[in-house]
Image (tube, rainbow, N blue to C red; front, side, top):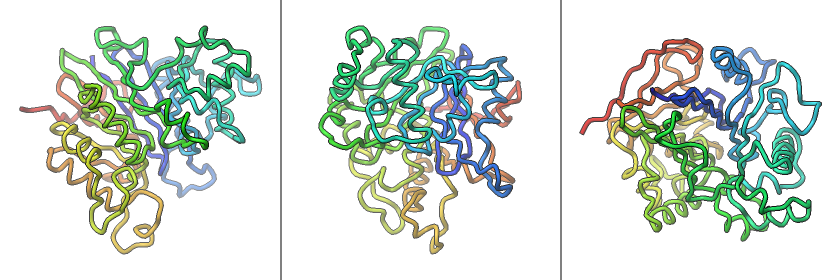
Length: 375
């Protein structure tokens, strides 16, 4: 059975839904930034889109909700949408439950938080105290110290931690899920050495492997890491013989098409990637691969948007377009629809590779246009 990955048009914000062969649903980030009071806002209502999918599956929960880090564009308005265990104020029949919450270790220890970032932290702390319904990515000493101060026994909770370089427990290629998740980040040493939390550098990065008909396909979910963090990920993966864990047929692009995920300089026409990142894109991307940029449209040269420091950056987009062109693949921007208003972009992942599903996620029988592997 195929799996599906859906990306939602949210501007410079993240929200992606993974549907496994056994119908499990994993939501990666929830950046619902649409302004409901602005009829001109082209971003989708993420809550409405996800409720459609859940109703179709006769569900009121996600098997997993992963917050890769606590920036607003990855968790905004989650407090309105989810049924949270830590407070009855965020419980009700219309709220969506989270069977298992995934967070980076720094999400539990960060202080001075407000709004939705604080909701995520409080929910994660509550579940860690309970010892269930959570996976914490990396086991930083800073978090161990916090647990000791809170009277939480680390040994009784260590099965809830997943380190970089390990597989997430509970998912196997040979199981009904037909998928596994290999964790690349965060690294515990980065959090222990830093005095200030680096949300982007310490965010969750993983490779998903999907199996259908004996054929494997790979998706890389890169969060908002920059070229320095990616350089570390590549170096460590190659050092420990895990280069294959950085193969990809489908990539959720890093940091909304920022040049800083490629190298230190934006460039004039195309951003030049540092060596390790160049290898990640040019060697590890497989034939007919797809890059999805969860971002606003790519700026036109000479416009105000083109001069903006914030992503997306035209020069980075030119790098990505060149990479996929050479591999006969695709570069997709979530806020650049072919026609009309931006809509969710859904991919079917089957024995034939990664194919763009032509029907909306709420339609039961989606047809696809295949980008099957050859050679």
